Length: 402
Image 1 (cartoon, rainbow, N blue to C red):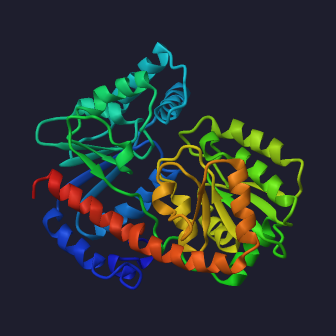
Image 2: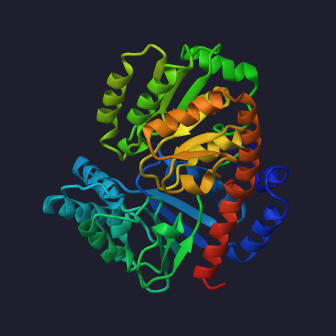
C-alpha cells in the first residue's frame, strides 16, 4: 500500500476487534474481482473515499479496479442538474439532455471492461451502464446523495436504470426508495492516516495559516466544502456578519471544485463578491490535492461549520470532529447522524441559529474542548475507514453469496 500503510496500521486507532473482523470477512473474497465506476478521480468525497479504500481491498487480496467515465460539457451539465433535482431543487431538463446522458453512457460502455464478479456504480452519472449487465455478474448502485424528496420526473428516469441493479446502497434510511431490489445502509468514512486527517504539529498548522495570511491572534470560524449552492457559503457569510457585531473573529471558506461540477466556478465568483466587503473573510480556492492545507485549517480553527441546506452525508463534519472540534451544521442529511446535538456540536436551521451557536461557543471556550473530545471519540467509533471497509466486505459477501 501507499506510504507503507497496511490494515494493521489502524490497529491502535480503530475500535477493538474491527481489524480482526475485516481479515475474517476478506477470507472468502480473496481472488474475487470488483469494479468501481464513478465520474471523477479528483474532487468530492466519492473519489476521496475510493482513493483510500481501494488499496485496502487490494491489500486483502481482492482484485479491485476503478474506472472513471468521461463525457461532454452537456453531459456534466445534465448530471449536475440530475444531482440538484434529486436533492429537491427544481430543474429544467430538456430531452436533449436526457438523450446526451444515454449517449454518454453508451459511449463509455464501449470503453470499459465489465469482466468482474461484482460491479459498483456510484451515483447517477454512470448508472446507465447497468444496461451492460450480463448473467453471472452482480451489480450494485451506490447512492451518495440525498434522494429523499427528488423531482419526480428525474427520479422516474433514473429509476428505470436503478431497478435493474441487484441492490442499492444508501447513506441514510431516509434516502431509501420504493424499489424491488435489496437496499443496504452504509455510512461513508474518513481515513485517520491520510494527509487530510493525520496528526500535525503546531508548527505545521501555523505555517499554513501564515501562507494564507490568516491571523492567529483571533478566533477562526471555518467551513471546508466544495463551492456549491447546497453547502450555503453565502449563508455562512451572513451568519459571520451577525457574529462579528459582538465577537472579533475571522471567517475562512476553504474548498474547491470537482471535475464533474460545471457550476462550481460561477458560484465561487458569487461567494468572492459576497466576501469582498470584509478583509477578515478569506475565500480559499484550493486544488484537489490540498489535503495537508485543509488538515491544518481544521486543526487551527476555533469553530467549524457545515451549514448545508441539502447534504448526502458531509464528511467534512467527521473530519472536523476527528480533530477534536465541535461542529455547527445544517440539520439535513448525514450531518444529523454525525452531530449529536449538544454533545459533539449543534445542528441549525437558519442563519440566525448558526450565528447564535457560533457566539455561544466563542463565549464558552471550555465547552469547545469538552465537545471536541466527545466528537473525536464518536468519530472513532462510527466514521473511520476500517468500519467502512467491513461494511463493504459484508455486502460483497452477501451479494456473491459466499
